[in-house]
Image: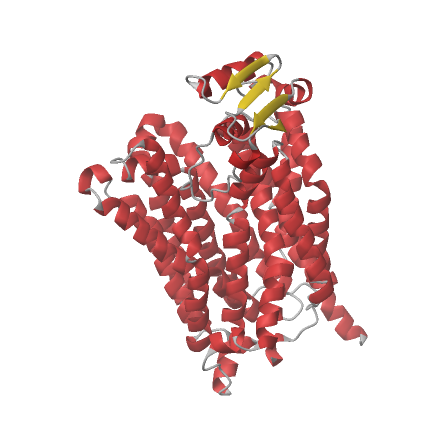
Length: 543
């Protein structure tokens, strides 16, 4: 390398106006994606009352979760539909269609009449809008990552695409802040009545800005070059997944990259909030504020790790994130218990609980969308204990035995009248706190641990877009990239909370469910190290 070239390589590349517009337009679209995900999930209980009020509350919540899950279920289908369109007709065209579908769906949810107003049409329209959103989301991320990467100069793809990667965290950040702000300003009653619509309607601002910018953008230069040369794929799906060479890349990208990234992402941000509120019984507002602070502290590291991946490679940073998560998830979550609810930690150590039941009656309570029913006496006790954040040991009993639980010297049978209330009273009596004491929460240390979890997210997610883009040839890039990404994040990540809960209920330990993200991250580490290439030096203009 000549001295002139060496000097140029370290001079920062100043963003052109077009590059800046590309990054902003792409980022705003994916912010809308994650913003919608969080507001819908956070407001599920309110949406259940608004759109499924004709059925009992529990069933209403289940139907709301089913509508939520519908968006996840069709994301891989959206990846195929819009991936094919992006490879056939261009990135810009597909990019505009996905943002219109996604943003309009979010906005219209805020305008939907309730069940009380239009009856069954209300939940039907809600589910249809979720399906439209899910299909659009399947094409949005791939389009955003590819569009930015194909506009990026050599040596800057990691940095430029890392702006896309910040959007998941920024979407969560915006959703939590807006919901907290509106709730505080208008009050809980007004928020439950009509104020819940505001977060959905606000998405229109992001939609209009993002669409306005996207309409001014040019087509990807790599796609135009390929189109002019007559090298575009005539059947991108068949070429991407019917050809073993390309299909192998997609499979390895899923198992060696996106699956591990997804469980760390959902574990470090989404499940961490669930763990604080549902397991440690920290008040929702307190937990959300601590998560927001952690996000604010860690978000700049998306850009830092994206920049670093242009220097040392994508693979080392992502693999390091897998290693750190696999090694430290257990102590970090145990640390959250220690600092956020020390009374619970003490009770777990000093007041062992024993469950005696016929093992054949104890189900593995995997319930991703809330539709399964677990009614055996064993399941009743175990789910009740887990909801109260109580560890327990299992004792096998003869077939036909009614399950019972021993707490200290007190024994409760599953057929005890008003069992749930009796169990809660006995647990509290033996030292288990009903909720975390706000005065005993060590907020700085809790935020520090939450920040560490988000830092792992930045490590595995920041370089991912550039890595995936560089794995696939230009002619099938949209199709090839989108499917493994959305299977990884939609299924491996989306089912994480339900899987973690089921494992914990089965084993009796509130931390045992962490084996799921740890095992997936470790598996991706092994597969990624052995089979996925480093792509930093790849010239994507020549494939």
